[in-house]
Image 1 (cartoon, rainbow, N blue to C red):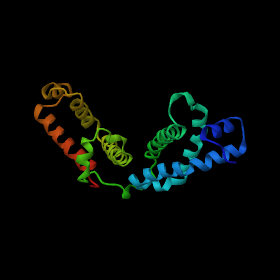
Image 2: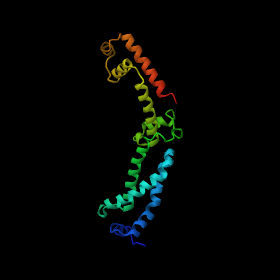
Image 3: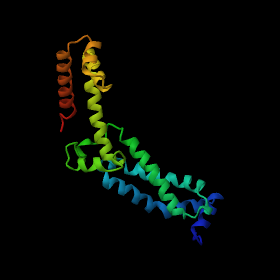
Image 4: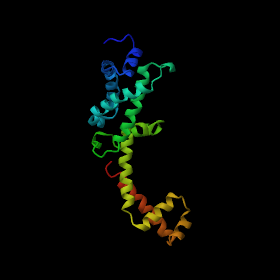
Length: 197
């Protein structure tokens, strides 16, 4: 089957033509693979999910055909590219939460490039940076969870930005004891947060 143009192919697909469906998948498969491979080049751990990402991208073809409107002055391939890219990025954010992703393939938090990334507008949009931050966040939450009740109360007073004298009074501590606890908590959290770096 050789349709005259992509719009004819879309029309045939929408009318249930099985050969048009196969042709549509064949025509756009390379584009989807290219999008997935670009994601993987930037985020090596995603290599584990390459086939899944390709399949997810192929599924998006049906959605794109359903929602594409010819009167919007955008060609179908551009529309499909945007739909697939957005969908795959959402999937990447999901995979970032999976513990089996190989963190040893990622940059550590002490990477010199991190300072540059902090100045980048879309820092958290970078999946590798996001994964590094998630790992650090998990260590921080674990350290807070392991603290005793009094230390947690001191930490929460610091988070609430309460004046030291007021916080010490509320917790029935002397100013010196409060300051000492605060310093010790900060040191302990830093050690646990950066212990693998």
